[in-house]
Amino acid sequence: MKLIEPILAQAAAITQLRRDIHAHPELCYEEVRTADLVAAKLTEWGIPIHRGLGVTGLVGVVHGRDGGQSGRAIGLRADMDALPMTEFNTFAHASTHKGKMHACGHDGHTAMLLAAALHFSKHRNFDGTVY
Image (cartoon, rainbow, N blue to C red; front, side, top):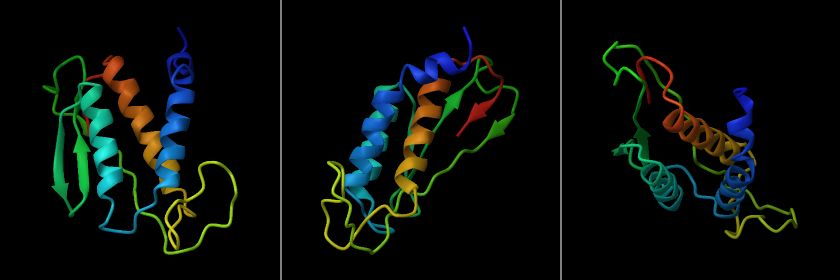
């Protein structure tokens, strides 16, 4: 099995998550819905989480095959906030919040990290911990 195959298998689900996040933009320190969505997905995938970091931030913890005993660690992060701008796009997942939009790609970054978390939770063929 090539690395990309299990990731591509989740592409539609991850795209849907990105579109959901895009449609519900929240400004900095107001990302309650987005943080709840991320926390729900991580929990669904069996990933322990820590919440309340920097107001709305959270972190998931995925240990590799060694249970994290090697002490090796890497942190992956994505901003979740939107910008105070009006979206004029007309696609189905355009912003539903007037004066707020994901014009900076944070919806995509959040979805990409969710994809990485899902992959690492299913394929723990690494030593250490991914945060």
